[in-house]
Image 1 (cartoon, rainbow, N blue to C red):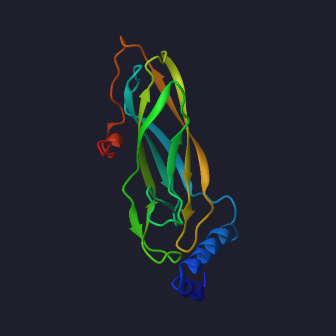
Image 2 (image 1 turned 90 degrees about the horizontal axis):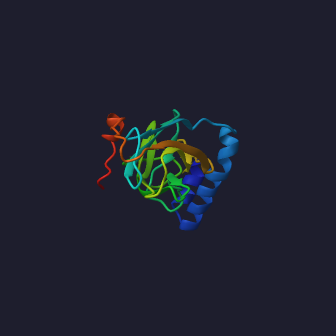
Length: 191
């Protein structure tokens, strides 16, 4: 982005839209295809198994490549696309709440003010309710992570990645135990 375009962006909202569009559309050429922004995803459950009707905690840990950040949720600029984690609803499981990590405020060439981002890593928590009639067995909870990645000067188009959580459902006579306590101690589910 040139110095002139930064000055232009401060003149009017319409110029700001043009600057964001240039940053967004020029990103592919500037970075090339296939950049490793999210370099790793790992899923966690707070219990080794769940019972029918139980509400349980799940988490997705993202590793973000060096020199990159992804937009937080919520974003504080209408032109940025927030990171979202959404699941396909079915009769077996229903999302109750998604807890996004606190954002990091940062300043970049493409924005006149601070923007909220995640850098290096992000840990997203999800409360999920198992259906009352779900039968014992192993299920795959399928979802989609959508994010927009940027470096210090411009942004890539949004990307969506598939996410899968393996959930073991057991009958009420089978006891379950907490697992991954260190991960879940870092997520504030009580918000």
